[in-house]
Structure formats: structure tokens, C-alpha cells
Length: 210
Image (cartoon, rainbow, N blue to C red; front, top):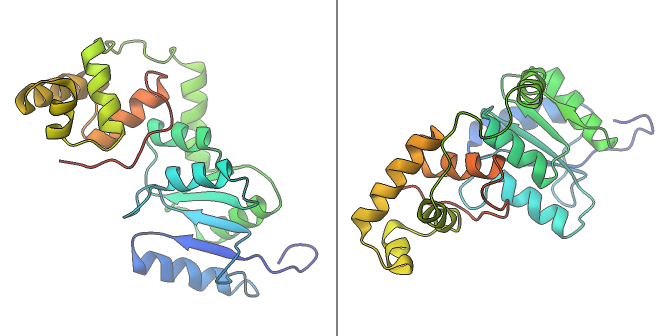
């Protein structure tokens, strides 16, 4: 597959079986790129049932596993992109890419190159050259930060209330303020945005939506 004609072993991880099958089909047409074990390249989605692509990427990098990581996802939100890159992924490609573009992305990651979807590159350039992180966004209070940190660790509202000695209703009120300040529509998005702004540590856990 590469110049040496070495087969590239690819691990596909996506929560949609149809997506996995489709990607596998066009990758296998490229002289058998897909093998079952010991992958050279892991192709991961952001949202997966048991562990996010971000969590898996962090694990791979923390354990110094010699595997290239390519994120293939429908999510192009800034917090996701920044969190993935901070986790150590080699590439970020959107599912709107053509089969040829995805195949090339896998080859590039296998060869040690960094790969970025053009749409993502434009967003990153805007982020770098635009306003400083957090400008125009109201900062969280100490209590709101505490609540969001526990959200990032996977705590439910009830568990957060018990931890901070406040009621579930008060927790919900704090979350409403947090969502408003961070312009987030979900717990996951709020945590990701706070991480990208440097307000939370990047080692967040698997989140539970309520």
C-alpha cells in the first residue's frame, strides 16, 4: 500500500455499523489495508458508546503505543477539534470527505504525516488569528467551575449535589448558567469548550448526558 508495498493494518471504531462497513469496503479495495489486530492506524469517531475517540487517543499516547490516530467524524466544532489535537491525534477528517480523501489520509498518517480536513484547517486559522480564547465569553464562577469539573468526571446531577452539599435543583441552575455562558447545548459541549479555553484540565472522563 505504501511505497514498500507493506500492508497498512487499520482499526475502525465507529458507533454506526453501516459507516464501518462502508469505510472498510473502500479501504479493503486498496490491496488489503484492513487487518483485524495490531493496527498501524486507528480510525476513530469522536462519539462512541464506551469511550470517546478523545479518550482512546489519550490512552494510546499515554501508553506509548505505536499507532497512528486518525479521527473520522461528523463533528467540526472547535472544542472537539482542539481537544482531539491536544490528545495527540495525527489527523482529523470529516465524514463528508470522499473515499479517496479518506484513503489518502490513512496513508499519510501511516507515513507519520499530520492530516487535517481543509474545513478544519480554516477553523483553526480563524481560531489562531481571531480573538483570544474566552474573549466575549463570561467567565465561570468558582462554584460553576466546580460543578463543570464534576460533570467532566462523569458525575450525575445528584452526585454533584452530594459532593458539593447542594440540592439537585441548585446544580441544574448552575448548569443552566454554564450552558448560557459557554453557549453550549449539552454537558459534553460545555466541558469540551471549557477545556479548549483552558478553564478545565484536558483529562476529562466519559460524560453522561441527562
